[in-house]
Amino acid sequence: MTQSTIKHEVSFVGAGLHSGKNSRVTILPAPSDFGIQFYRTDCKGENNCIPANFTNVVDTLRCTTLGNSSGLKVKTTEHLLAAFVACGIRNAKVLIAGEEIPALDGSAREFVLKFLESGLQNQGTPQKILKVLKPVHFEDTSTGANASFYPSDTFEMEFTIEYPLPIGKQSKRASLVNGSVVSSLSSSRTFCMNGEIEYLWSNGLGLGGNYDNVTIIDEKSNKYLYPVRHEDEPVRHKMLDAVGDLSLSGYPILGLFVGYKSGHHANIEILHKLFSDKDNYEIIDAPDSVSSRLPGMKVQLSDLPEI
Ligand SMILES: [Zn+2]
Image: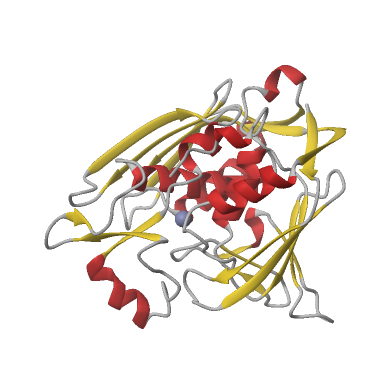
């Protein structure tokens, strides 16, 4: 199994979901074993590099924020990170002029579309993977959210959320292999309750949200204000978030992730728990036979569903 990057640079411009501020992101091909690294190009002269790793997560309130020792941050990294996983992109240099990744349509769809249009470059160098060896659990006692890893022969996810109607209880289990993150999860948008909007705005959050990039639920009528892309779009979006967050392990993961109301906080805490004991996992060179049991192999533009 070998590493991949993008063939050509791609750019995105838009407002961040929370800050509402515009930023420009340019993504460049990167050499083997580079991983994903963010560069704050509006902060030249400082240490402006922030590697995408769970040890660099500095905030998980409503999004996953990465930071470095100079105090520089990049917010709302999770949908872009999920797009890298979806397309099997292991190495990329992310230049960002601004503090937050553009929300675009609120999902990972536009990132995936541009990556697949740009084309992927197989780098021919071996890819290491993380194999889960033992069950690992994290529970957030304040919210009831929990997250677990179990050994599995593929990258699988089982996720449950519970909200008032129209979301209700949604559960989904998926084997996230080949193009399935692109086909099943990448177009699902973030969501929030109508009654939360003022609270979010007064706390400087959700300022870039609109009716196109957020699925809004009206609690009075218990209805979605606008049509959803899938009946279970909310749980699919939470799975997309988890795919992005878990990529901060630095490796493709061979294992089953089970999340119950899990959000960015629990997704990152379970990684800390996983890495806290070397008996929980092993890092191995992946044989070719493993590639079809992970996301991003044989992925094609036709995997992206119509919306
Ligand atoms: Zn999200």
